[in-house]
Length: 161
Image 1: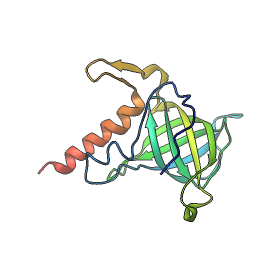
Image 2: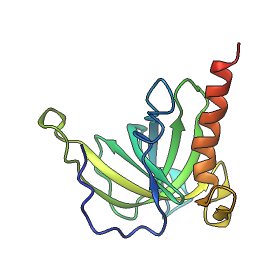
Image 3: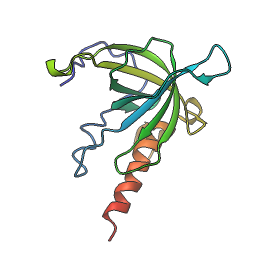
């Protein structure tokens, strides 16, 4: 569906939220996202209206999503990430690293693929949270814990009689 043949420049491995979890549960883990541009030149106020998006993947320090809005490299964003069946969002802030025309099917023209390096998740520093999980042999962070950890809790609640 997506063309991943570009030279990899990420510091950490990406985890495909569409495929990796899709096979473990009965429904898709695509997360709904709402984002706003933050005016960093002034007092850090929200600069734009809320725009909807759908996540594409998540990594140790970032997230990518598809939306109708093309953003500029360097834009600061406030994001609300909604996991399936959870009405309470995960609050994140980050900076746009790239935004480009999405290479999707013709019926979905004018969609943009955007990559964001996350700075905070629920007020916690992303950079300060990165560690190597020796038990599972994987680099982990507050980003992955907020998405996968909360998703695990939601699915456990759903499957508890």
